Image (cartoon, rainbow, N blue to C red):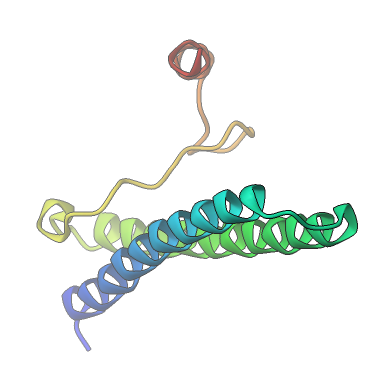
Length: 116
């Protein structure tokens, strides 16, 4: 398998997981609205909230896996002179931790400003 074929397959997985995440989030929002309108004992409402919280945890873990795939794709492209623009995916995210792909002080300040 050529690198380009591998990247294409990984990008398909990345896009599929992004679409699944959006769908999951929208369904959870709809469930939350319905539960809010129901007349039920508090312990049952709390149990449902616990399930929803667990779903968000799983969704976050799935997103971390997607980000890992993006980093692999970026790494393969960068190290094999492959044009990433043809695959239509985001660049790997940067971390706040001290690594070569980390945010510098100016980037961190800009990120914080953009979230306010």
